[in-house]
Length: 499
Ligand code: ADP
Image (tube, rainbow, N blue to C red; front, side, top):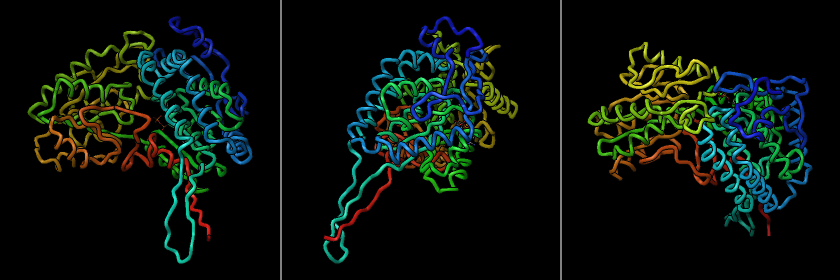
């Protein structure tokens, strides 16, 4: 039950949903936690509690996993044709589209992001993802093989659903991350237990209602709310789960790997980043400056692929810093429901403390803020978009993922691409990078030299359901989206017949 009056700018449907008594979704039913415990959901623009959701623990996780197991082993789901599965996913996408405005408002209230952004990015991208994956349901195929074993044989492979999948998602794009996870798992014919982030469970709970309305059979999708240790850890460790897919911090990624070791379930991980944006002296600065500003400030820097290390050649460094700082200082920071807001609050008090802590540590070690550097309001978790210069490679702000609107700008003097790439690659992460130049040879040579799962040339943060996304090094295992993601949710079986 809501403990405060909700924002009057919200549509009544959204207010009613946020204020309702929230339940989790297990085995086709909306239920409380077995313990009856709830956890509080905060409005990051005010710091006030706006809802309570069930706090799942091991016993609830076990119930959800057993429901998913039954649905996989016995239920109608695995006997449905691929085309029927695809149609259900398409129906879900249609329902989401019909509720686009409501989902965007829920996302803004829960995460803090501008509703104007959720309306054109988070929700439509989630809808697209489901539609794209619905198409794959009928196209997951094996091969035939001309084998050389003495005799006459027919050999082929089947690509089968991996089974019961546990999925754990973060708070930065709550609905979109749910789509990235659910879409391919359902297309492949798996059943799912999805654990939402404790900071942002509301859009996922609304999605559960739409999943129910779409008519997925009982137990195919189960949606849990709860904390990482209380609900995420028992899901990652559960012996009846065949595969765990996780998006979140590298630190928790390591815990997931340990937890999965018990039954050696398959694991895919999409983890942190410290992505470089590299501007060469010949770049079109009219595009590179706003492009690299958006690379870091989009979604308040709360993107695993945020361009948080800005390298610019010394000949253009001052212009770049001035341009990016100018954009940073003009970004309108405010409540996400305000139509003029370009950047909302950070998601939680914890993130606010973490990000301002990083800024202060950089400043105390000698970095200079050419924009921002402070909190942006007395109430709520607002931080000024911040540009730091005069950093050194040893500083925490340069080495560690901040996950906030803070970029470290560093000049380079080199013309040797290997050395520039070495500096860009000098991080345990390898999620993404952008290269800004008019020279297609430099652009593509750099794309080869950079060790990351995505390289953008003269752009940043361009995503599509068809494009694989994921990390080299400590940024993860496996890929999301595209056809690649289907490898996460299928097993390959070789079948050989002696003829
Ligand atoms: P962040 O630090 O950005 O909040 P986390 O990696 O802590 O990201 O959280 C991402 C997701 O992982 C959330 O759903 C969270 O509840 C979950 N989580 C956190 N700790 C664990 C854990 N020990 N085991 C499983 N899931 C966890």
